[in-house]
Image (tube, rainbow, N blue to C red; front, top):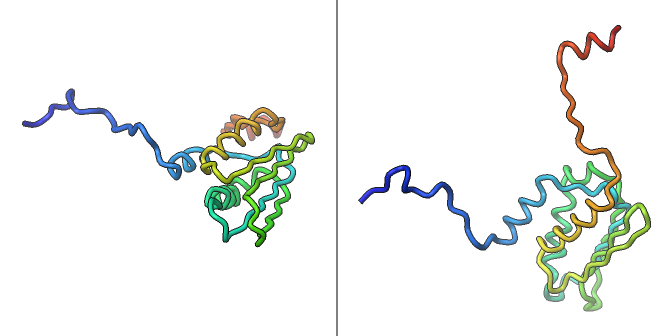
Length: 139
């Protein structure tokens, strides 16, 4: 028995998306324009540091780093301290994540909400380059 085109499902949408898939979807249009400082501190020998290490590697891509000149400090400790991410915005507000029991996608989603609230930078402008724009500038 074969299914006709009408009976076939359009696309399979899973009810559960893995953390890596969510992280990839978030990074498509991620920016850190209003962030002035970021401080990562974790003990690599302690459990539950995978999420902060994933966030660290995700936020240090060329695309994300081009969007801001935020200072980054990484404290690798050996005192069995819990992983923590401190974000300082350019307007002085501070956001602290205790990432021991959080997923990387949860951290990124929450940070994106705060970043979007404090973003004062220019939105992506629609710039169209045509032959006429060059002629208009010359006149």
